[in-house]
Amino acid sequence: MNRIISLLFFSFIIVPQLHARIFPEENSTLNYRLIGFCFPAPHHVNNYSIEIALGNYNTADSFKKHIILSRYADTNRLIAEVPFFGKDYTWRIVFTTRNSTKIYNSRLYHFSTGYIPAVDTNLNRLRILTSAQKYKDAFVFVDALGVLYDMNGLPVWYLPPNKENSNNNLRDLKLSPLGTITYLMDRGIFEINYNGKILWKTPDTSIMYHHEFSRLSNGHYMVLGLEFLLCHSPSLQDSSSFSVVDEKAKRDSTKIYKKIAFGTLIEYDEKGNVVWLWRTVDYVMHSDLLYSYYSGGYTDQHDNSFFFDEQNKEAYISFKGLCRVIRVKYPDGNVLNTYGKIFTKDNPVMYHKGYMENRNDFFCGQHACRRSQKGYLYLFDNGCDPDVPSKIVIMRQPLSDKDSLQIIWEYTFQDKAMHMIGGGGNVTELPDQSIFASMGPQNSKLFIVNPDKEIVWNAISETWNKNEKKWEMTSSYRASIISNYKDLEQLIWNSEK
Image 1 (tube, rainbow, N blue to C red):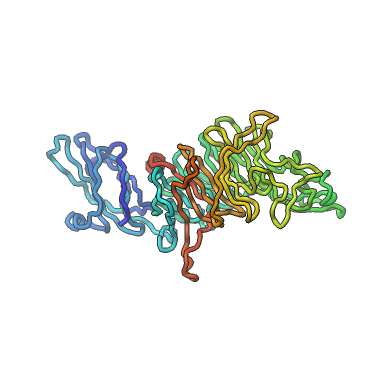
Image 2: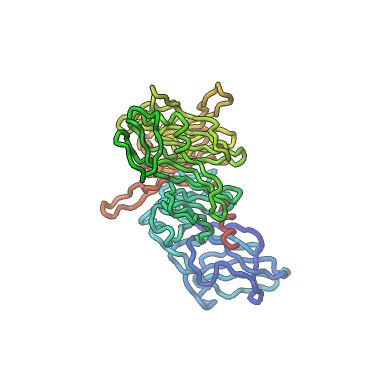
């Protein structure tokens, strides 16, 4: 039987004659094993416990024979873990009066835990390579599976399937600052509660969303989008009059036309209205990136990661293909600084065999740019060719116009199997300044590295290939972490509001 954990919280409840909500609701099906139990409490009761039996029972005698869990609390709420998905459970509350002389049992209540293949450990698993110590009470989301795991590799929650997430291209599943869960699909962005109820979604399904979606502390939402625009220049060797044109306009036979992917950073309010929009095409047309067309090589100008610094009103926007991060003032959109190589007509963006040749000296093919607690810029550096190891880099930002980036810490993957060429990857600074990282779709390893560069937790997400009869890496774009139990409590109790 899986380990069972519990946490006591708030104030407990029960007596049949009191009209108050019982949770889990009678005969409900839950998409999780970590359950917030709550019930009404009479004033004369000060001790409570819940008893849980595996199976569906309607008599006290049959129930008592199959009790698998009993948990005590002095409040009317507690969180307890049941061992299995896809099972029926029966439970009741036992309470004692204040003088401890009378014991009462509630009626029997019933619920079940649901099942999807993603939580079947014979089909998908989070294999632990290094056990956690300090962060043993943390939890991690694996977005491709839509599953939340504990640090022992056991699934405790899953995203309930519905028509909104049926295209199976789930990305950036994570906890929001308000104790909810956010994620994105190709044509939709969503906020849900622990029960999987959709709390918010964008009304605009015409936009292709990608890479990153976050809820802000003010209740707004920020997400990356794509727009494909038709562009032209006199030739691939001259970008001096490069411009965007109307696709329906008559084309000049002397000019070169290409449809190019540009990015957007969109802010929505609670009603789904666009309240702020930053477009990479506007940035490109007034920056040195215009010379990226001079070589006739790279044409994709979309951004692949952002971090919004709400306190300082700044956005950090990452361009993987250009090995560049820019710092943008909010809300005016002006670029405050550029981290990466500056291009000219004589030194444009150059590519060879898919790799950028004139990359900067700090990072290449990066994902998940972030600002640390101390104001440092940090990111996941994929590397741009097989001979350059992937790494995590922390950099001090320039202090003046004459200053430049300075690497103050980096962790380089010595194991070549942990190199990550291509896309994906995520980094999150933890309270003790350790870094939680995931490596993306080509290498599904997750780990925590401390400031002394020691791996203090390490796991790999794997999926069973039934045809070849072997475990393979799960093609997950990103994993995220709930670093402590307190944040999980908030998520669980918020679902009952």
